[in-house]
Amino acid sequence: METGICRSNAETVDLSLFKDLLLRSCGHAFENEREQTLSAALCRRMAARDIDCLNSYHALLMRDEPELRSLTELLTVNETYFFREPGHLNLMVDKLLPELMHSRNHNPVRILSAGCSTGEEPYSIAIMLRERFGSDAEKLFRIVGVDIDSTAINTARKSVYGRNSFRGINQALLQRYFEPAGAGEYSVREELKRQVLFDVVNLLGQPYPETMLIPDIILYRNVSIYFPGEVQREIFARLAAILVDGGCMMVGASETFHHDIGLLSLVQRDTLFFYKKTPGIVFEERRASSRAVLAPESTRKYVSQRVFPRESKTEVNNSPLQSSLQGRVDDKVINIKENFDKALALAQNKELDKSLEILEDVITQDKRFTKAHTLKGSLLLTMGRFEDARGVCETIMEQDSLSLAAHLLLGMIARQNGDEEGALKRFREAIYLDASCWLAHFYSAELMFARKETKRARSSYEAALRVLEKGSMNTLGHTFFPLSFNAEQFAVICRHKLSILTSTRIKG
Ligand SMILES: C[S@@+](CC[C@H](N)C(=O)[O-])C[C@H]1O[C@@H](n2cnc3c(N)ncnc32)[C@H](O)[C@@H]1O
Image (cartoon, rainbow, N blue to C red):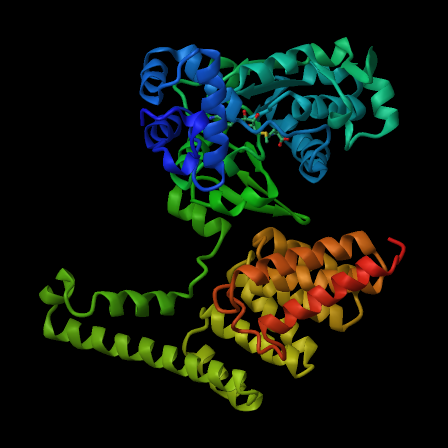
């Protein structure tokens, strides 16, 4: 620990004290490649304070809050730009806000950008509101942006931006809402500035200032990716608590599903997901109302009984009659599971008719066994019975409207029927549900490749390949699809298509 970190290799220095401190203070974890970022930041701050002993610097951090803030600010990732991920912004302005305005009874609708960085997100909202509601927007809405990083908040307050921030904006909006500020920079016009309030807030810190309270909409996008699971849950819970009843919270596309923890209802509109605080629904109901559990009931019973065979207290105390009834339930569950495994093995062995026959039996015994429906749908698809397969998907989605398998199957059915747009929409939804759904990436890539949309095809093949190179068919959860290729063959196809896209210049 006494070794000067700047002179030594980060791996040889124990940074655990700093990691603990930062995890507790701002929620950030610094494992693996992020460790380098931590040691570089420590170097800079220690040099600035003329300290070359890690222990002394740690002691300083423990007593000097401004120093801890300075270190934290070197560690935050402030990447942002105007109109980033516009899907959610459009949904909010076009649909959610007009609905919420009714219930606000002429009080301004409150919008909170939690983790707003240098302010591009809240200003994008202000611009969109002006575009839609004209100068009334100033009275109708109140926008607050908060961030832990005071340097970022100072930039937001100054609101002068360079080229990087304007990646996603069109020229007309640039001219309407900004004025040149020299050296290729632009400053936000006064009327927009008036509408947005900024504050330095640690989302993990206590307590939240009044300016943040009872928002109607929270945008909490691209912030939680830097937090470990327990911090993600804690901050989400704190934000959910301040959200008004009936209010909505939007997270980044890749952050959607790790927040489906039962606190808010996960809602889908068109192809987009967001969270809603449904008044009067308590934890477990909310979870059930937003998303049916992935493992079918029968499998979960089976697993728990196998893990705790005959030791549970309830069973010891059971009467002989109860025990015998319980035994029959156990046998039935095990029987269903065994039959399902048989059907799966037959499907993998290409004995599709036999597999289907057993599956019908399994489904008759347990109508809510989603995996059995999924396998059935996939068999029907392989057999070219598209309408039957679609019917199966509808059954699955009645039980679990966010079923990844059903979205994927519907995409494949649409593709087979020549409905390219329908297929792409379903694959997009599947990717939303699970960004590592490589089949959805792969089939999207194939469709775009056929349409000669080079750029999009390339990024989809790359996404599929990234997942394929990391995992296996089983770990990726697509074992139910009796595919005619294995994962390695899919990877080969991806590489091949990528090499074609690189060597020939198909116009995108
Ligand atoms: C990548 S930016 C996202 C900006 C914007 N929401 C967007 O989507 O473009 C993440 C921001 O989260 C902020 N942040 C990280 N940890 C935070 C915390 N504990 N409290 C408040 N803000 C935090 C960082 O300072 C950074 O500015």
